[in-house]
Image (cartoon, rainbow, N blue to C red; front, side, top):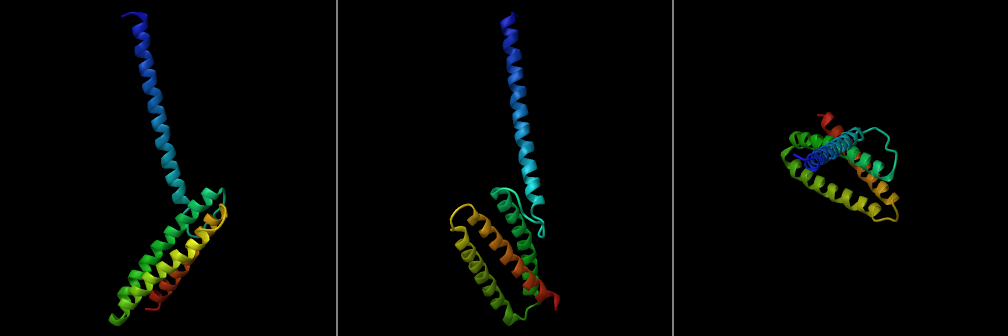
Length: 140
């Protein structure tokens, strides 16, 4: 085998190593971003940083409150009298429509602050509803 053929094989191995390093770095970056987003989802944590970081933090917090709200809603349905169940279902559906429409108002505002305001709206309304439902289920 001549020098040029060996050099070509070494270049190919080097290119594969570089490609592997790039793919590995991308995978680790994605995993770190996912982990960071999970850390930002603590319901009581203060959200700060860039607009993107604040919005992602608020999304994580909203998801946490939404889980709590769903658990409390399921408990409230279970605890409700038969005549109350359908009304609670209707109320919850309408409440979700209200929350989404109300927060869209903020999201349609001017500038990047609108995304932050909409995020706070979603988190705060979801937190309030979760608390209301949790309080209802704690009384029984």
